[in-house]
Length: 139
Image (cartoon, rainbow, N blue to C red):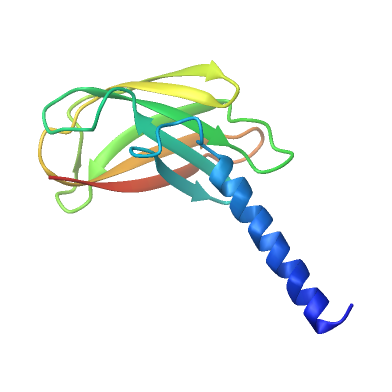
C-alpha cells in the first residue's frame, strides 16, 4: 500500500472509531448528556429530569459501552466529590441495572455550587474495577 492509501486507511479508521464513540449514549438527551471514558470503556449519562441544581435531589440515566468483545460490567457504583474542597456528597446513591448496558442512579444531591466530579466505578469480569470520571461546574 502506498503512503496515500495508508493515510486514507488511518483516516477511515479514525472516523469509524469516532462514529462508534458518538453512538454510546445517543439515546440520552444531547443537551444534558455527558461522556466519560477510560481503557476503551465509554459511559454516557444525563440527569433523568431536568438540569442538576444546587440542593435538589436528582437521578442519572446511564449507558455503559464496553470495548468490543467485552461483556457489560457486573456492577456499577456512582458517587460524586468536590475536588477543590476535598469532600463528597452528603448522600449515598443507589444504582439499578436496567439491562442492556443501561443503569439508573438515584439519590444524588449537590449541596453547594462549584466543580463536582462524578465518579463511576465499573466491576469487570476477571479484571480490577475501572474508575471513570467527569466534571460538572454547578453555578
